[in-house]
Image 1 (cartoon, chains in turn cyan, red):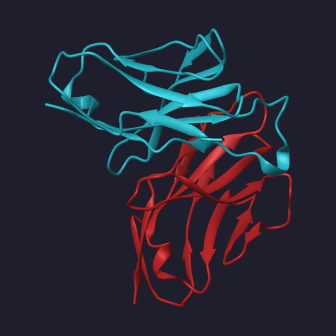
Image 2 (image 1 turned 180 degrees about the horizontal axis):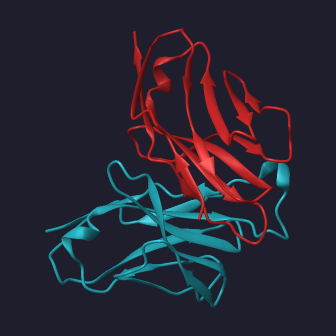
Length: 118
Length: 115
């Protein structure tokens, strides 16, 4: 059971380039999400998904695109990278409201991707 | 919208002593979760402790305990017998209980352990 995995761990992009951050989980979780972490600002929600084929925007969605074709995978696409997107990106997953055990509920995080846009 | 405030950007404590990290939040919901996450230099987010709002008893996990004051919307973390491995960023987070798994985080407190 690998939990939540993210690739790559580090990435450097030039302004205007596009790329996809990969996220996968093997816990059969319905809910997956992407956060970005900037110094002094905590983690902020970018996009989330409540199941395959269903995605929605979070607090800071501009410049990012997501899709969810399978339960396991939730990639994050940067369409045209900008220096303001330099950040650490975390993927997280959890059970849905209907299936989770209230006493053990938590969100599981991947190890993060450090992205630098020059 | 919910907000989470951590008013202590940095804290330090002598090894083996006790330290308390503060967190306040704002919500109109009556049922929700509160979490403390630890982020060491490896940047992995590690769950330290969870509290459900409907439970009046404060959560404890070994050396970690919380003081949950629902009416005051306060959720502080107490670390007893501090160890060098406790040095990390600590984030307070809020999660509504119904129909919404979105986490709202505070800005974090950097904890330094003094040997």
